[in-house]
Amino acid sequence: MTVALAVVWVLCFWFVVYTVKYLSRSSRQLLPLFQPRRQTVEVAVKNFHLRVKTNALNVLHDELCYSLSSDEYRLLKRVLLHLYDLGSLVGVMGMIGALLLLWSITANLLMSMARASFNSSHSSLVKRGLEIEVGEITPALAGNGPFSVRAIIPGVTVPLSHLPIIFVALCVCQIVHEVGHAIAAATLRVPILFSGFAVTVIFPSFFVAFPVIRLERLQAVDRLRVTAAGCFHNLAFWCLLYLATWTKISTLVSEFFFEDVSHMGKVVVGVHPVRGISYAIFVEAEFPQDSPLRNHIPSGSIVTMLDDTLLNVSGIASNSDPWDEFLLSPSIPVATRGWCFEKSGLGNASS
Image (cartoon, rainbow, N blue to C red; front, top):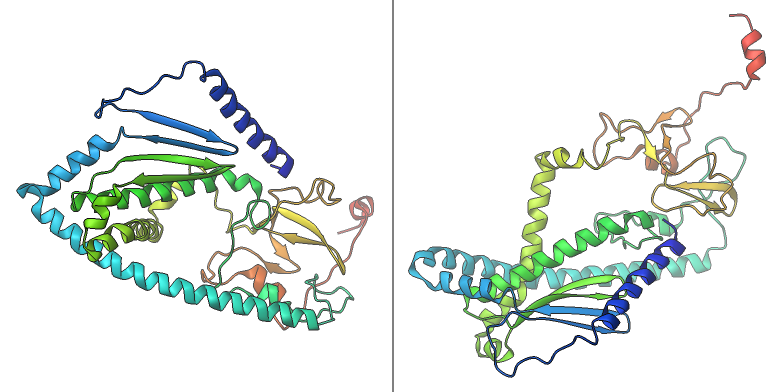
């Protein structure tokens, strides 16, 4: 998927939204003055912002509030309150840790940019054996530490073809987040006004609204429970996914959508021009349509070897990468060289 095609799809989506809005404008009716239990759905469209809210889920939330207030579910309510106390503590610690990490990454980035501005020499990764001087690795390529943050930008750091799975993951995580707020509010018998979702340009979001007066009447500890419950549910969801990955349960599901080729090599998804060498192969960016190597190294090709170094990860520790070890290692391995023959001459050669 190219950038132009992605823009066309976005414009088509908003064309459909405004077409539906125009066709339904004549059938709009005024809401009754008093009908509090009626399920309603309100849709608002302004510029490139679509907002849909409804009170259809209020009944489920009210039933949950009633159940957690009964003696039958008293133990469950007590467990949930203790869990949300833990979530409040984890949320505060996570916020402080995230701020410290953000400051550290910003400082390292500024220092790397300052060093790069004073460094006049150009560095690049090249194939072993080429008569080209190779300098040290640039600071931009050295940000692979355990606490490094990598932005997921479709078309820049990941291919545009990853957009659907990114949107699905984003929607699922936000739904889990809002469900956390709703359950925490139910333990405190705080009703919800409405819930819904919104789309700004192409970015989806979900929300749950509570009465402000009821929230203000809560104690500070209870308000912290409701506020931190969303992030705590996301953390619990991540732990559940990590457990599924660790127990290899996820492989049973992923086999229906993906094929593991790590035992064969690296999948090529990008080729871009690089100054100092002809072309560089990237594994996480789509290459342009006018790339001369497009017909020779198409997207989806598998690179099995670099010189005589196998790129498969079978039997290799999970934290090691043969691709990075070959290109970023300070020592140059001795490659076994061969000869090139014409196909006709090779066929006529004696054994």
